[in-house]
Amino acid sequence: MNSVFKVMVKIRSFIAIELDQKVIEKLREIEYKLKSVRAEVKWINPSSIHLTLKFLGGIDEGMIDEIAKKAQEVARRYNPFNLKVEGIGTFPPGKNPRVVWIGVKDETGKISALQEEIEHEMNNLGFEREQRAFTPHLTLGRVKSAKGKDELLEKIEEGKGINLGEFTVKDFHLFKSDLHPQGAIYTKLKTFMLNLL
Image (cartoon, rainbow, N blue to C red; front, side, top):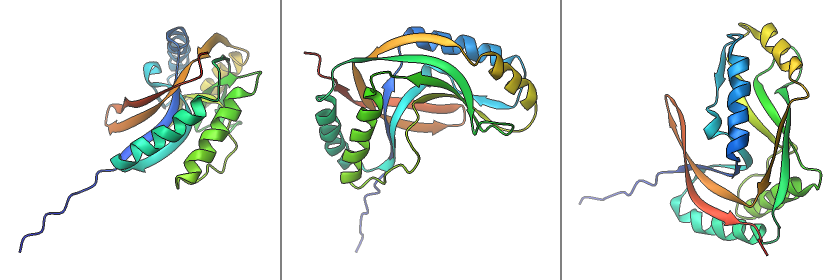
């Protein structure tokens, strides 16, 4: 007797805020300057950079609606708010960086509160809580080796006080991430509008 097994493909997914076009262009300029030192960094295409609120990992397609319902409930509790994009640094700070980032600041504290509520709701759905404290940032690149590292750190130090302006958060999204040799391709699965009233 033949049995047909349906293979459940896991969808690699995350919840994130999309960036304003003006910010993306500024990120492009910064990346261009940093690339001039020829350090071994895997730079991320600025049009693919998001402000990640929660990485979910592999999910079943059947969970999308449940995730969306909870995320939209959280979204309705917030009015649009502004975020400032400023500062540049590395994780970890110091001589052996692994990640180059641009800072995100929110003087109202809304981004941290929103992220915490999403974290809580996703934990209720069975997703493990992130152990590290939430530090809003945009990942520009991942350092691959020590080649050109000192010059890169010098360039980053020069740009410490950099200001890329601000943008208004009106919504956030559930994204699907497909990994390809040339980089990840992101597809929006659901959009969650903040309370615009």
